[in-house]
Length: 120
Length: 115
Image 1 (cartoon, helix red, strand yellow):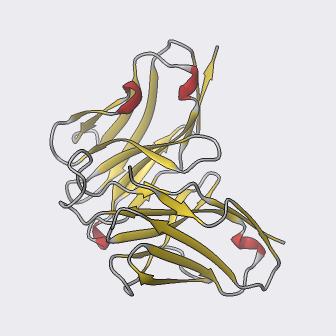
Image 2 (cartoon, each protein chain N blue to C red):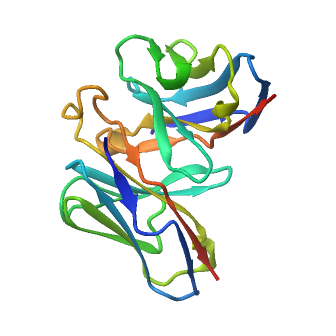
């Protein structure tokens, strides 16, 4: 089974702090993603990475940065946390299209349990 | 750009009744479509997906969805609801601007199952 783990389930930080959210996957997936989930808005893409050291901005990258130094790990960084970044953060990974597990095929994203971040 | 719209942020059904969750998509290219489920305090889990093969897709836990190009719809159904189906459901479409890697999600539908 694919496993995606996130470093914390719950996190409370102060405004202005630098915050690191870590995500690790154990299936050698090329693609990794960070989404933010807010009620009534669904999931919104913050950043994604399709290879080590490669990153692409999603729809809401402002105030965030990412790092992917190893294939299995994708970190989300809040440079200076603000109260409007209080949210649920979800990490996901997937294999490159056409090279996924035979019983799931291309493009399936596997999600971690999420980190609920509160910024005070 | 691809997008999805989920009609109804909350749906309530009785146990044993039909479940119908609606999803309409917008895409200028043949879409890849997904339904995910999220149980309380958990991440998302894939229910089923459509990637241009059979238009009727069967998923886990008795759910299925039918791709209808003429209606630009991908509604999720289950013949008989179970209490354990209570969760939030998300429809999603692959994004061409990311080489189909990332997804655009709908706003979600919370399913409540009454005893």
